[in-house]
Length: 308
Image (cartoon, rainbow, N blue to C red; front, side, top):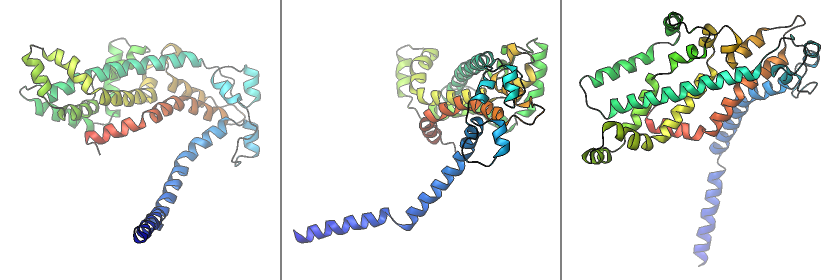
């Protein structure tokens, strides 16, 4: 009995030493340093947004907010008068925040719904249907992943102009409404790993290919579809250059472009650093929250699909 108790105590001491080994401590120190370095820019953006421009010029290196206030956010949301904005270091230009937010939500939502739906259909065709040249066509889709996006901007712009869709929300959405090679590849990886026995049984019972896709394939891949939907929504929300090329008025201007214009409206007294950081935070915060809420699902889905 005494030997058993002594052995248990030795095992506990050895596990305690293993938990506090130098390598484990070093790993935690490195992880904490990486975490601080990663999060510090976000803190600095928030700190600057909560400061006043006049106080920033007096003490620019202070770690906390200088002249704490929400005037920068009021300028971004268009809640300050021209006199108040100029007095606090802003340009005095107005911004219709809620209109731009609505445009961004409409564009990002439409692009996500249509792109994920068509990509899922294409992924099902490449993984489940048997047709001549399937692998060759899929290889062409994979090759298109190597084409930089900037190479497609001019052809897309010429097409949108010929269709008369310049300065419209539909013109912004149209190039992204259909399937993308990455989404097809992503969803195909999951469909390839799903057993075909259930689908074959459904087809024996008389179910068509379309019914199998909607009733069986989509429910079995709801996790990957949600993941690619989140990634698509984030990319569409953050898109800047293409909406900048197509939209010219407030009616079709999305939030990223509008805040970019707001950032460019520098007053004569100097850059509106507080307004700049507030606008950046307002544009990025919804997507940061969305990504943090679904980060575990995204990482697990990417790992399961074999993407490295």
